Length: 385
Image (cartoon, rainbow, N blue to C red):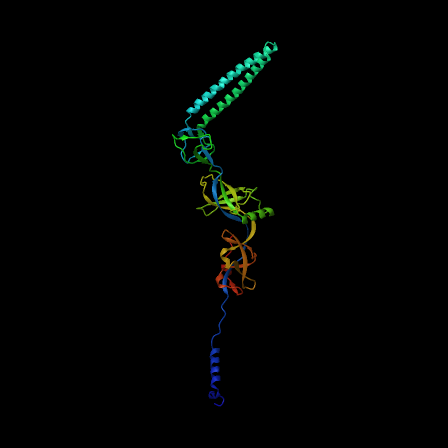
């Protein structure tokens, strides 16, 4: 019993400290959590072509207003509203009877002047023979020659009047000037129409439906981009090169139609800061209609090699974009990147990554920079081919 300490001799404060220290040493020590499991993939290196997006409107390559060229009552209409017509098809007939009468009068006058010219020619020929025998005064000979010249001029005038009358008679039949789709009639049978002036009656309109234009506007940023690409030789300007375009309608998800650039304006609109451009597209199936809005893609840069990663691997830190990568020591690290466009569901990365980087695509929310991670090789998400 002498070897056992007498606890009563130990000061109370010290005894309390010893007891607390003993119990504290008996508590289990915290264990560090295991490394988070993540899935990784390496960027895919692939040749891609950059397409720039625009909103455009379908327009006809030409639009013709069919107007009356002579005045008169509208006798008949020979088309159905909205049908397709060919150049030369009969559309309207204006009462031709007044013009038939005028054409007959002009033809008769033309024949009369021809007869007068022939008589003047005979008189001139007789005068020439008499002049050789000095049996006619020079003044009489000059009079015969002037009569003949006047008769020739009268014939020319009468011939022109006859042609004009025939032309007016022809204009009573209003025919389609071009192939295309016709609009509705703007005048009905029995109405008096006016022609031959700036106030001529508008009868209908015709627009071709194949091919068609797509007009759109490019802002200053894209205009400068295309100019720099042209200067560097990466992409020729659409002013002289029919660069390809792709078209999608409002109810389509794929850009199924193709076309080519046809026109670029010579200056930017100072009010909108945009440049008007135009593409030519095929409409063999007749689905496109002037006035439709479409989504248009114009070929920009490319093809060029790009690094592609799944879009979900990119995070946002205020205005910056980043990805999480696994370094050679197995630690998660943050890389700030400059993302580009989507290609087949994969996001191009213009700056910040190399083809050898291991990008975390699964378990991103469980890691933070500088912590160790465990890579699940079997569940890594490969980039799409």
